[in-house]
Picture 1: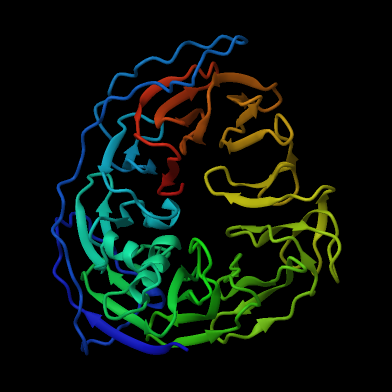
Picture 2: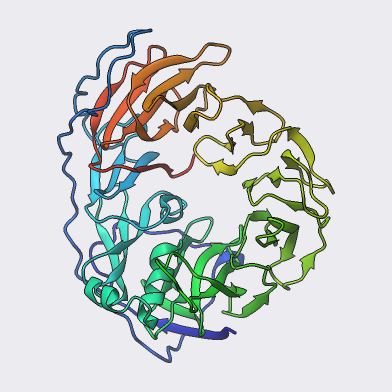
Length: 504
């Protein structure tokens, strides 16, 4: 059980702070106690920003498709520099974190440290900062980096646990705190101006707890102190509450320790006064947070091995009172289109009150979902840069849940991307070979490049340029109408993420 704890930790700014945030509205600005009762934090020296653009090699797996015949990838002249106001594209992977202009030009390294977790949560609402959780040989750090300069604003040591200590005792209290911060999303920016960063740290004890960092004063405030490990901070859309879960690792562990195996509870912290509100704990071992029905209610559900998922319902975050739901069961896959209230749900047969096989849409004000597709999807995700649902392997689904778009090859199409101009792009993998295909509205599928890819997104300005990260980390840009791939540089690693900053 969490108890309320509001401890302000005054800290000294490390590095250069060249950007100042505007004040939030009174309703969204936490009012924190002025008198600290405990001061424990560690700041680290600011590393020099890396701003050079490295030379890159083309993807070794890429070949020119025979029909049609695009131009061979060529080096693109380096532009004058990054645009002053954004938007930008952020790349992250084992080689560090990179930034480019919307069309992929002036690919520049911001940090040589690998960021843990999803880059979407790392980007401040204005796109002017990144909150990176990075693992070094000696500790786990939270590094706040300014965009696009790459200057380090603050470095906070989350836990001083070395890699050797982790390996020597992987079931120690400190190791579990490390897993909570490293293996789960552990940062969340306050909506709006993004003055406050909620993050998980273990600076003051053996467990990971919830903290706030104030970008204007550089003060750190501890919000919770409890026996379980805090994970997955999530702000309410109005910036009033921080939702999070508490988990534990309990024996027997068996083989590899892949995640927490006990959900201890769910709480919200009211940012204005630090009040901790206990929320209903869903059945199962996961938080099962789906999204926000509105500013005051979030979606959750129960899960078990026998009947997949049950009782989709909304919870009032201010009171902890659940809103009764229809009580049906469904497959684990469910996602929401942010800001619309539209849910896409994978149905499954065989359980009490089951929706049945297929993909279903639940719109605001509806009591029961309606069937959109007859076949069940095994994965449902919201794609922020494409503004569509992915219901794999069946289709892409529009944000309003009205329209489904079939992939180019059923059960062989991956990494989809949809542009503002209506272009689609997919990676097709057949016979152990990959290729990228694109399609204009009303047109046919057009192969533009052979080879496997790690990620693809369209530029956030006019949706005319497709950015592709090859399996070897090489970055290509392909612009309508011919989509001839151009080599832009390299991010130096496989599996690179690409996200917009700020989201347009």
